[in-house]
Image (cartoon, rainbow, N blue to C red; front, top):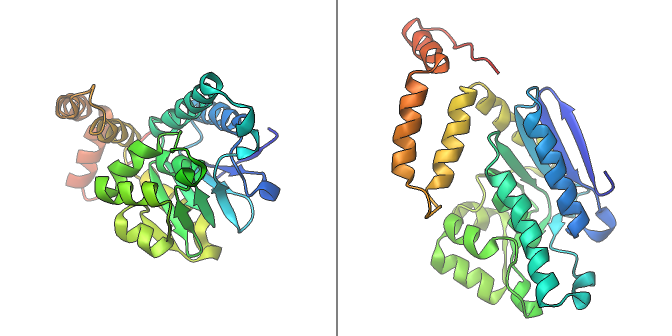
Length: 256
């Protein structure tokens, strides 16, 4: 991989965006590399969760790489947007939990990448924003949709139209991030969250992710899906072990 680094330790994979000289700006090749890595990690039974973060202290990802924008026309611009949507949807629908560990700037495409993850933990120095209207553009990797789902229509409208940025405490108050960690403890806090999730039933975690995602998909009846999965899980060996452990007052032993 040219633009990212992938490491696996103690059943957790860390994908690090590795363009520090460009503040980890997202070019199309980097996005394609993320997609390829996600596909491989999804197949690896030894990987129970994934962290996506940026190299250096300055930025998670300071937006898309706009240097190539002057060469794009309507057709190639839409194709670029579709490429980002494909990979970010892939992350959002992954059966394993994915946490964005946001260090420094998460702007434009960087914020869109973070929002595609299931959970977001920010460092104290994190800064979030959608600056696209400053360029005469709109977010192109799902930002106009996911920001609404996370912080509500009114606030999403405000931050996208004004292109104003928000700090980590504000992002936490709005529900954009799950928690804020000291800068030096960001990855540790992210790993702790994944370790906690790893203690739960892996099939239940997978079905919970799929059910929650259905709540914002107009093509899926989330209530019907929830009932279906509830029945399937109730009949599963995983649930039988969880219930038995509860009754016997012991910790469950789930197969990974």
